Length: 115
Image 1 (cartoon, rainbow, N blue to C red):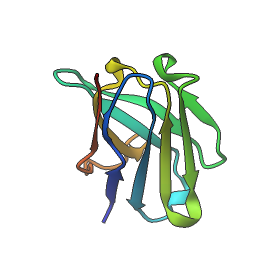
Image 2 (cartoon, rainbow, N blue to C red):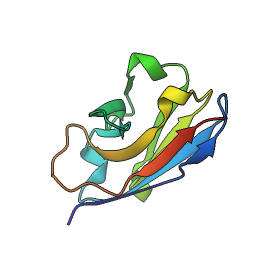
Image 3 (cartoon, helix red, strand yellow):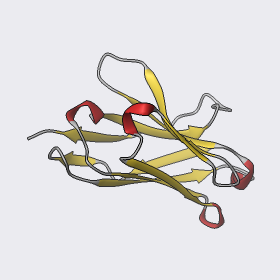
């Protein structure tokens, strides 16, 4: 059964950093393009970063230069290093395949950027 467990969120001041982790229980994790998604209050779920099986990365413009996605396929784990955080980064962050291959999502991890 596909399962994703996100962790590492928290409350941080503007300009601060957080590192999110995603533990993925998915068969053949290494072959999938994976993504970090986020959903701000009252807004839709958006893809913010993705990484292919070969390590090629892609980012939405608003996080380019600040966020770095990485993966450790030997551990079925993915990461999102977030630097220079801004209030508009406040959201619940989720991981999943890109595009999502199932309707099962994890609980997400809350990131709040505020003074």
